[in-house]
Length: 346
Ligand SMILES: Cc1cc2nc3c(=O)[nH]c(=O)nc-3n(C[C@H](O)[C@H](O)[C@H](O)COP(=O)(O)OP(=O)(O)OC[C@H]3O[C@@H](n4cnc5c(N)ncnc54)[C@H](O)[C@@H]3O)c2cc1C
Image (tube, rainbow, N blue to C red):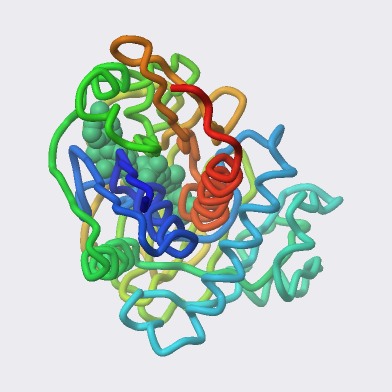
């Protein structure tokens, strides 16, 4: 019998999980349930930049594994005929630090073209007024226009018969007590929603604000590794400038002063950004989790003690795009391993 699977959530995590499950089990019957779809998910707010960021470094081992797989896929797609359709490109990133000694990230071995920067390098990249930067590193990264990527992946899923249902499900237990018990596996990709849906009080928001501006003359990513979150990230259509990081702020209201501060900080790096046309402004909530991403299989009891298998895949913080494909493969591997085991007495 083909597997019957429910995926809850249609952000980058739910969509890539469904794609990978179909790669492993082409006959699987998949239904995706979600309250919001692209372009209205947190994933759509994302800058689509590959770099492990705002995620618990306690999980360095898995992040390296998930991040490498995603990096390799994105890089390959940037060189494929789909690059424009997906809005994926590869470009140089410069991370600038205000310490004499460079801080080398734990993931430096998995990216291409990694190298440390000297002062001469730094002033060939940013305006000379930025004297506080003394060290840093560069590497080849990718950016993806998530608003293009999710719809393209969704189209592929629909072509393969995946069903999409728009609805809010109050709790996982409520789902399992009803329709949910008919599935072999429920894949929980509810992002920040997991806080109430599971419920999991370890999940919390880190609010971020970014602007999308027209600045086609900027061709490289700049990240400042300083106390204030500052980045300039060209996508294939616009440049994302940011940002902010406010833990436990649940408000999606846009703070105009924060946008002005972002423009001021980014204009210090590139004065030409001061007058760049603003295309849109965004506020979003990164789905962070104490202890990091939850990616594991759990067996829960439904009505009459009927056992239902749930695979959790949530809590990706500021790195959901960066580790999406690696986590999705991990989900499919959990199903593969579990479905080969002798069936428990249900
Ligand atoms: C300003 C900002 C910039 C960012 N930039 C980057 C970046 O450059 N690179 C990067 O890797 N990451 C970035 N991130 C982080 C990234 O956006 C997240 O890690 C990622 O979106 C998480 O994906 P997700 O699919 O888990 O969550 P979401 O995109 O939030 O999707 C969750 C899905 O679950 C559904 N759902 C939730 N609860 C329920 C329920 N009860 N019933 C039904 N459906 C439900 C939602 O409707 C939605 O479809 C950024 C985030 C912000 C805010």
